[in-house]
Length: 249
Length: 241
Ligand SMILES: Nc1ncnc2c1ncn2[C@@H]1O[C@H](COP(=O)(O)OP(=O)(O)O)[C@@H](O)[C@H]1O
Ligand SMILES: [Mg+2]
Image 1 (cartoon, rainbow over the protein chains, first blue to last red):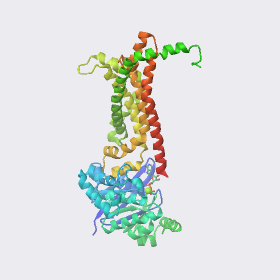
Image 2: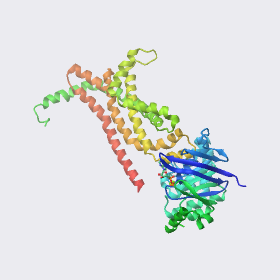
Image 3: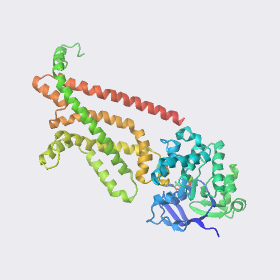
Image 4: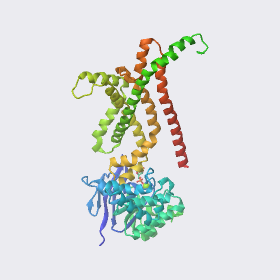
C-alpha cells in the first residue's frame, strides 16, 4: 500500500463571488507524478497556490503526510519549505545573480551559512547543466534556462513535493524539451510531483495519474493510458478533441 | 526688455549690486551651509523612515491590519497639513511646552517637521514602486519560505527602489528648497541671513545670492535626474526587445 504524500479533501475556493475550486478531492502518493489538465481558467494555478498556502482556501482540508497544513495553527512558512513551486514565468529575482537566487532561501530561511549554501547550489546547478550560469543575471539566460534555474532553486531546500504550474507555457517551442527533460529526471529520482500542464504528450509519458479539471471541479481522474484513450466524461472528450485538433497530442 | 528699459539701473542697484553681493555673500553662504546639512540629515531620515512606512503599508493579511491602519492614517493626516504649519507647530509649539528631556532646538524641530512631512509623501513614492513589482515575485519569494518582511526586504524593495529612483530624486530637489522654510523659526540658514541683510541695507542682492546658491545645487540634481530617467528608460526598452 503506497502512502498518500498529499491529500486534498473537498477543497473549495472563491474569489469574491466567483467560484474557482469546488469540492476538489485529490491524492498524490509518495513518488507519484500527477498531472492536472484542463482549459485555461479551470483553476489549475489556484489549486497549486492553495496547496502552497499562497492562496487561503475557503473550505476543505489539505494534508501533507497526513498532517493538515490548512490548519490555522500551522506556520505557512514552514510548510512552504517542504514543497517547491515553479510558476509559468517571472520566477527568478532579476536583481540577483543565479547563484544568489538559489541560495537566498537556504540562507535566509534555514540559516545555512553562505559557503555551505553556495556549495549546495553549485552542485545542483552542475547537475542540471547550469554551472556556467551561476554568476549571470537572469535576463542573460534563455527562457528555458531560467525555468531550469527556478526548478533548481526550488530543489535547493530539498522539498518533499514539487508543484509545477505550466512551467513550459511561456517558452519558445525549441526550449520546451530541455525543461521537460529536467522534470523527467526528477521523476526518475523519485520526486513526488503535481504538475499543471498543457503538454499532453509529456503528461501521458510521465504521469501516474491524470486529472481533468473543468470549471473548478475534478471531472475525471485516471492513469494516462485510460484517460487519454478512453475518457469517460463528455467534457473530457471535448477537451481532448480540441487539443488533438490543435496538434498537441 | 528689462535690459534696455530705463528701470534697469535701479534694478541692477537693487538686485544685482556687485558690492552688496560681496558684502552679503559670507553670511548667506554660511547660512546656506546649514541648509545643506539640514537637507542631508533630513533626506537620510526621510528615505529610511518612509521605506519603513511603505513596507508596513504593503503587509497583507488581517494580522497586520492595525499597523496598516496607523500608517494610512499618518500618511493621510500629514499630507493634508501644509508643511509650513507643521514647521511652526513643532518649531515653536514643542519648545514652548518646556518638557524635560525634549529637545528645544528650533533646528531640531524644523528638521523633524520636514522629516515627518516628507516621509508621508516619500512613503507613497515607495509604495508605487512596491506595487509596480510583478505579483509573481512576491509569490516566488513567499514560496521559498521567506516571511512577508523578508520577501519585501530581499526581493520586492530592491526592485521597487530601482523603479522609483527618478521620483525620489525629484523629492531631493523639492526638499533641498523646502529646508529654507525653517527660516520662519528664526533659524539662521541661508534665506534668513539674506533676509537679515536685506532688512539692514534695503538691498535685495542678498536674496539673489541665496537664489544662486540654491540653484547651484538644484539645477545639477535636476539635470542628473533627467539623465538618469532617460538612461533607465532606454535600458528598459533594450531589455523588453
Ligand atoms: N487573485 C485572483 N482574483 C480573482 N480571480 C482570480 C484570481 N486568481 C485566479 N482567478 C480566477 O480564477 C479562475 C481560475 O484561474 P486559474 O487558477 O489561474 O486557472 P488556470 O490556471 O487553470 O488557467 C479564473 O477565472 C481566474 O480569472
Ligand atoms: Mg494557470
